[in-house]
Length: 274
Image 1 (cartoon, helix red, strand yellow):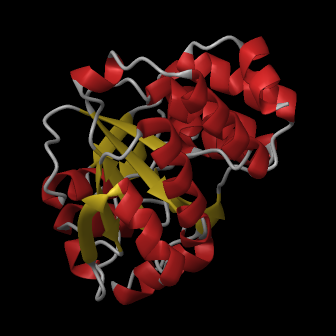
Image 2 (image 1 turned 180 degrees about the vertical axis):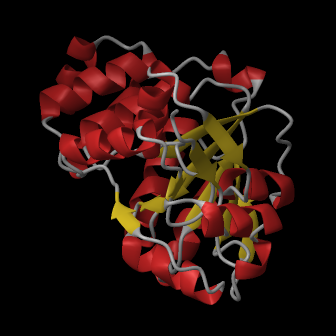
């Protein structure tokens, strides 16, 4: 008889946020799959839990997941956790869950905190409808394509961001979204938790003189009906293409991207820039 895979949510900062059930399950399973065993062992030590750990992350070889599946099929139980929050969302654990579902291995959720839901609840921006966009790509072309694809969405957008990329992300959002309201949530549930409600332009100015620190959740208001019907001028398109080239994009690619965003012909943008 197959064992069971438990998807266990862990605290995003404050260890008091763990549930009684999560502690019990982590204490009872045969082994635990962790994104980073060094992080997870600190959590387990805090609650005096002694269980074998298996490192399971995006760079794990395929034989690692095969071994986990084999152990589950042989009747062992396993908990999968991430460094913080609910695993298997923008996380390698989702592949493990899919494989278990395909093989009819039982999967059970043990809910816990999530940074996106926590930020949505306290950001001060309407979030009855929101889309979780995760982390933006470090590849500029994919990053710009992502921002462009959601620029007309009227619901609230939630992103995760690391401190070393925050400034560039805010600048890119200002270019693609315009000067919208944003709530910048930092170090949620931790000692230095901070929620700054401002605009994208003010946020860009603020972080030009203040160094980003900690992990961020960015809650950006959706496009208004006026924004979605906006007509761009050639001047707008040239400005966007110029800004993209300053960030390292090739001139031809920048004109193509500006044309896609504004609807102005690429040839006209290129001619104006030249």
